[in-house]
Length: 66
Image (cartoon, rainbow, N blue to C red; front, side, top):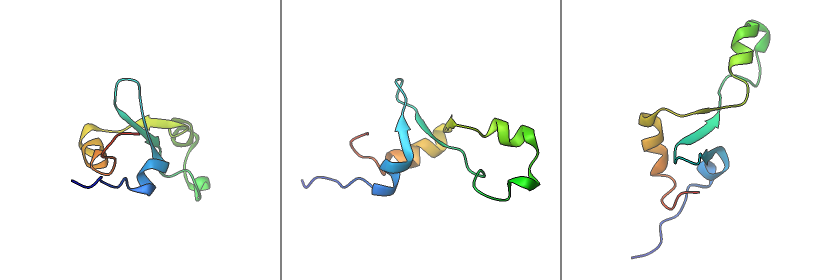
């Protein structure tokens, strides 16, 4: 069998935690921030662990992990 290719967009955007969960940057932080309140901006700072339903889809893009 040939080797499977990793989606290059996925390897740039996602990281694995030590327990094997996927973490990613939070959406909604690039522009139009004046329309959001301070709580929204603070809570979306940094990265978040993805839900298991989304992580299941993304794992198909990363056949050999990261």
